[in-house]
Image (cartoon, rainbow, N blue to C red; front, side):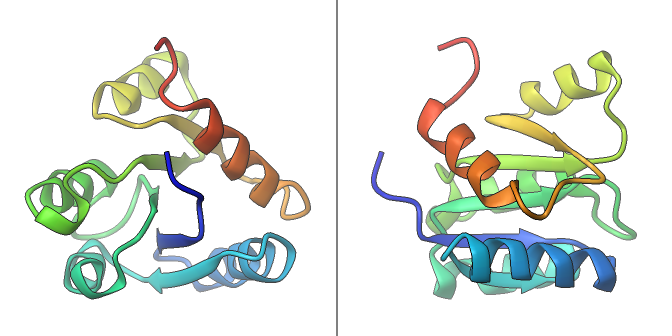
Length: 130
C-alpha cells in the first residue's frame, strides 16, 4: 500500500465535519476533501483521487453503504480502501459495514486528538482478518 495522504471525507453534520477536518488536516497532516453528501462525494472522487474514503454511515439521501457502492462503480475509487464512521456500533452493524468492504469502523463520537492516528493505524493494518 502506498502512503496515505489524500482522504475523501463524507459527513453531513457541519460541526462533526469541522472537528474531523482540524483533526485530520492540522493534527494528522492529511489532504482532505470534505463532502456533505454521497452525491457530492461521487462528483469529487474522480478529480481528487483519494487514497482513502472516510464515510459517515447515516446521511440523508445516500447513506454511507450506498455511497460506497456508487464509488465502487467509478474507476478512480473502485479499489480505494474505506473506513466507516458511525454512532451505531452494535456488533451486527459493524459486521455488516465490514461486509460492505470497510477496513474498519470508527465509532462516534471520536476523539479528535487521536482520530488521525486511528485512521493511519487502520490504513497500515489493512482489512481485518487478512
